[in-house]
Image (cartoon, rainbow over all chains, first blue to last red):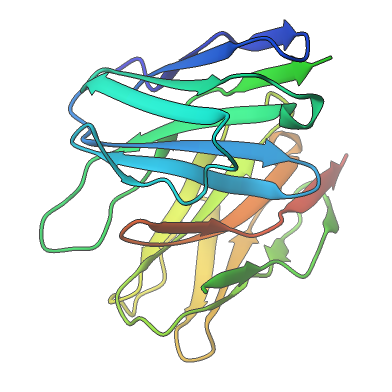
Length: 117
Length: 112
């Protein structure tokens, strides 16, 4: 299995530009998570999809952030317009939801390092 | 809100020695999962070990083991026979359903 795939690995953009981060979860996984990691705030859950449906987006910092999952094998996180404070590493993770128990292990992608100048 | 606390920002261990990383958490739930993730300089988040709260037996994975104290809400990670490749940030995580929270991390240095 290829694991969770994220692209691009690095993104440098200028303030005000639109940024789109992409994620391909592990085949067969039905839950997908987007996280942001910064030195100041650590790892923060931004949004969580289950069976392609957004379940909890309470972690999305503001309306400039949006996420979609059009099918089971692809998700995007978009920032429009981007700001310097959005600079961080963005991780995507996926898992299989096992019935009868509350959760299963999340497997992370390699992350996208975003720099907004 | 559930919180995860790692009280040791940095730890150091001599190669081949044993080190224990601490983690405490706050929850009112009885059924949940706990994890330790490793993040090397490559920044990849790698699962080290996991513990299901309904299991009393402590999880082990080769040189890695946990001391899970449910009543005390404590979940420490023990690394035996430390290797240079163990040097990384280690994150403790709590998960129940959609609630996934991470500690601030412990940076482990392994001295040759």
